[in-house]
Image 1: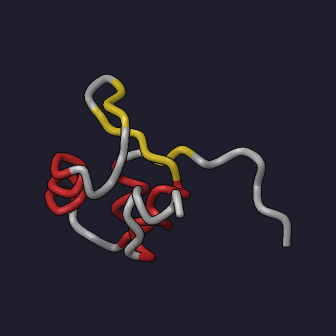
Image 2: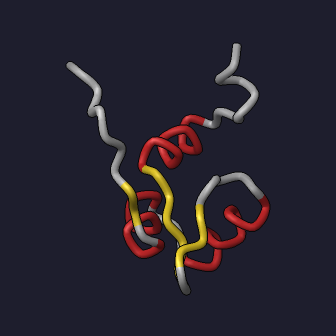
Length: 65
């Protein structure tokens, strides 16, 4: 199956639902750098591919190999 050429951007609420974690836990992971996201106004935006990477347990450095 072909991978989507455009990655989906998720809000905090959507990301928490996708990961099935609470909002405080999600925000903690953002602040610790375990999930890479961008602050947009009062909320955070994150790519779905970044959440998939997080779920697989991959680090940013392991992708470069």
